[in-house]
Length: 234
Ligand SMILES: NC(=O)c1ccc[n+]([C@@H]2O[C@H](COP(=O)([O-])OP(=O)(O)OC[C@H]3O[C@@H](n4cnc5c(N)ncnc54)[C@H](OP(=O)(O)O)[C@@H]3O)[C@@H](O)[C@H]2O)c1
Image 1 (tube, rainbow, N blue to C red):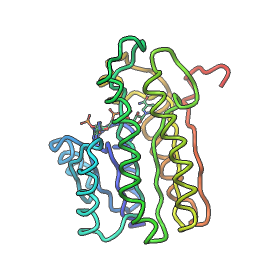
Image 2: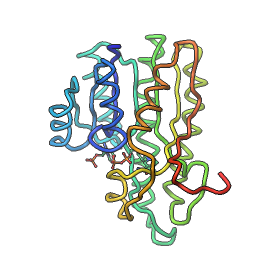
Image 3: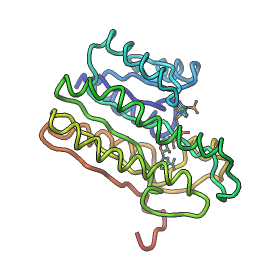
């Protein structure tokens, strides 16, 4: 389709699978993540158009990234705010101020930063799709996941508000709400591996579906579970 597609956290898990799907659809994929070696490897191994090293919790970094993208490509058609992580998944009394701040910064502030920096691009273009990656933790509660859940619930409501703001300009925002899949998430959060039937490709398909919707329609949000993950009541 040759859209200009920016995906954060594109070196692993859901983000990498999503980047591969857009690239396979003929889009120009800009793979963004914080580790230069991983970004270079992802671009090289998957034939992505470009890579950019950005810590998504760094607002000034987002501003510089926007200038870089626009100077090279002139526009952005799809922005996928996917980078995130557990930081700490444990009982609330084990958190200190720094870990709370890190969790919110990585999972909520980063998404708000990216959207606020790129919003005027979509408004001027009068087109564009933002897809923000939340989590089923935004709507369902598990013990030890409270801080992460608060951030991901913030992503869900932020995305709805963003859509209301973008809609008059012909741009749109979708929140994809994944359940559990085995990715780098478990290792970086220091929790055990999951053996769910949901795959990274399933979430990539959901993101692509939202971006592929006709220009006059929007997917407000989409929750995707693996059938093997028990949730009673859903
Ligand atoms: N896996 C699940 O079960 C699950 C369920 C629901 C929602 N999610 C959400 O899905 C999204 C993707 O997670 P994943 O499961 O695919 O995890 P993952 O495999 O660990 O991938 C996370 C990606 O984000 C990057 N990243 C982390 N911190 C960053 C930062 N400060 N700046 C830039 N990039 C950063 C990572 O880079 P490095 O490789 O350098 O760490 C990696 O590319 C996250 O928002 C996560 O919260 C995951």
